[in-house]
Image (cartoon, rainbow, N blue to C red):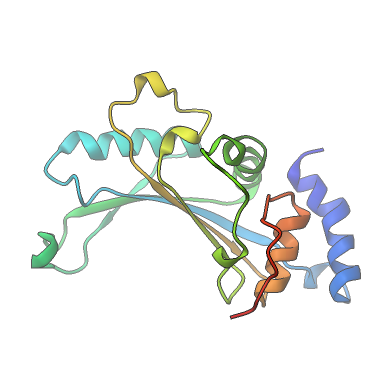
Length: 184
């Protein structure tokens, strides 16, 4: 059973029982997954942007969009209109496929992984996660990588509290640490 079917058949029922929702539309759901890579540090090297673009394209299965600096910041040697990063937003079936790959393949491949900290869920119920190395994704072959870069991942939900969001992610199979959850 894939992750989307699991959400529709099992997770919705568990969440309704746990939080007492009146109907299926009240149950929190995942809206989108956003991936982004910053290329500001390697702005002098044009190949760095190309490498990050190819990486995101492989990982997400969709073409990334360049993000552009809105202001000039002299301390960071950034000029207005410079390309400073790349982003991809996944929705629908691609999002569910990516999440399944993330939970079942990518997170177990992270070096010294002991589970996700519940603190990575913000007060609006969204999960943000950073990877130091992009080579943990199965689409990236480590022998053809010239330089390693990190990437950020953000999962947006309709949950109203961090506790609802944590229950949603745990029911979907995200590997969280067994720390007591404290609301901020």
